[in-house]
Length: 203
Image (cartoon, rainbow, N blue to C red; front, side):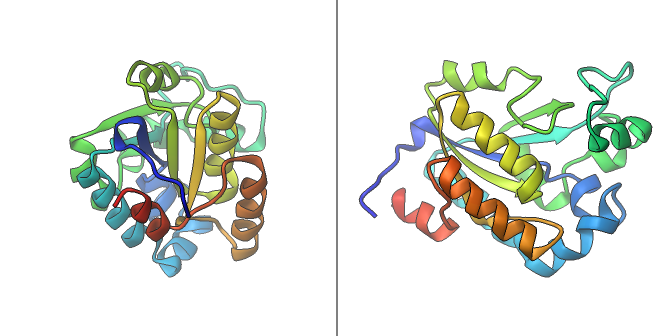
């Protein structure tokens, strides 16, 4: 690779690393808990986030939460209907809405954004926050690959950002869904990279 990136204009966007998505006891645990654990994605993502933070790039975490009154939630998909019906589990202070323990220490030093949309860049001030800091490149991690990761990566590309999904720091409910989503993102964004490839670009 001949590309090189500046940590001053690059950010890691860490999507939905929260108990409801990642852990077996969370709302989506029956669907995602086992494949997340089997993939080893949490450990890889923690190492990647720590390395990028050490390189000087901010790590921005997003949480899907539903405040009293439902905030910006629109029940226009099966996914949004399901979380709307179970919104007590997604209150900002609910146990399931919290970032997983493995990510919390790093998140304390960076930016955490809540919203009620599938895209981490929708329904919040994050696009403006990025623009104000001159950030034009996003490195996306999170769960699930074919849901919030793909939606956010496409959204960021449409906003004019250079977006790379970090392929070994995302996962989905099935290996097939994960692979197909990464193949889509290779075409629809600036392309998928491994964490090792990204870190070489910052070395």
